[in-house]
Amino acid sequence: MPSPACPLCKKRGISVDKATVICHAKESVWPIVDDHYYICENPGCNVVYYSSKGCLTKADVKTRVTFKESDPPRPLCYCKQVTEEDVISAIRNGANTVEEVIEATGIGGGGLCKFTNPYGRCCSRNYLPFIERALDRKEG
Ligand SMILES: [Zn+2]
Image (cartoon, rainbow, N blue to C red):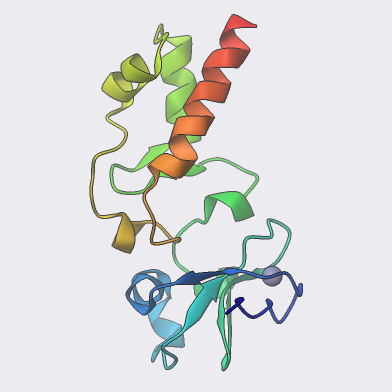
């Protein structure tokens, strides 16, 4: 079954676990009443989570959702609290490979993404491509 569209921007989001939504929603919007939530992936949309009963906007969510933010700090790895800026400065300070960036920043391997990452999915799907792109830029 395709996921329902975001009530604000009408783009289809992806399913997130209720446990994830509870971790990121501000206490002011409790109780989290629905069982099926979706995350809106549109960077320009103010909605973060939505369900058939309504939406939670950026103002209702306490976590900085990286793809909805254009200013630093932009979190890359939520378990280890490593940002894009941390990765860039590690590369500037001499890290030349993905492994060296991981070693310098401590990024990854936290294992708590279900609760710490607003997607409820492993942060490596975001940080590995980011590190590779940043290293490419350095060489190029
Ligand atoms: Zn949206």
